[in-house]
Image (cartoon, helix red, strand yellow):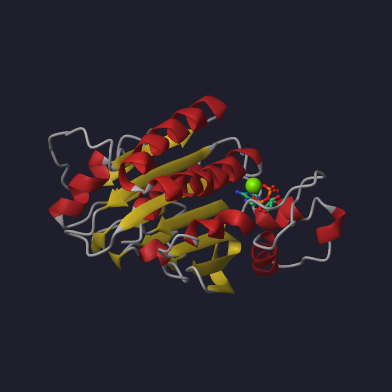
Length: 281
Ligand SMILES: Nc1ncnc2c1ncn2[C@@H]1O[C@H](COP(=O)(O)OP(=O)(O)O)[C@@H](O)[C@H]1O
Ligand SMILES: [Mg+2]
């Protein structure tokens, strides 16, 4: 399988560009990648790790800046053993930018998740107003919790984040991504008899966003539905969820929430979540 990563943030597009060739290998062709956000970083590692024995080939971006960024964010060091990196390797300084960057981390269990939550907490405290901090923290924590409790899989999950000041990228706010290698939303949600009617991943993603929908037997299911509280103090939130062969996208601000789902050609294993929260001025 060959996945083309071209242009800006290609994995946020609904349809992934995939060709079913390459003799059982997974080829991640990032030659034309011009901007990678936390979702590309996290998903590249997750796809490569999930490819198992199939050999992964990462064709590196022509753009030296993007290439250095992949290296800086630990994407290269987290590729599985035996993965081939096709292209030039950068040698860059490693400034400590922990107030703005969370390099890709492997959430193999609760300890790693706790550590990431701590680091994100510091980042959020630095960039968000006191009234927003708790809500942003809760939103990010919810996605991590879902990935490690509902999306548990033998390979765990991967997460990354960046706070953009907006000065160079033109976009301002916190972006966070977590990709897990678990059963996916349809399978998990259908464990609860109330959601046995679901028969597509698209319907399951939209249901999971509703208040009270849970695949567990407990009285819960408000995690995703409560994410939007983060817009109470202004700012815009965008969430993209991908699971199986479906993508759901939600854009919310204080007054409005628009939600859409789509069934796509390419299915992914597990669940991918990407969230952006802007901080209002
Ligand atoms: N990463 C994931 N992997 C599998 N299923 C998930 C994932 N995230 C969410 N879900 C499904 O969506 C449901 C709703 O999630 P959420 O609103 O956070 O409620 P809760 O976590 O309290 O059940 C979950 O119970 C689960 O069935
Ligand atoms: Mg939850």
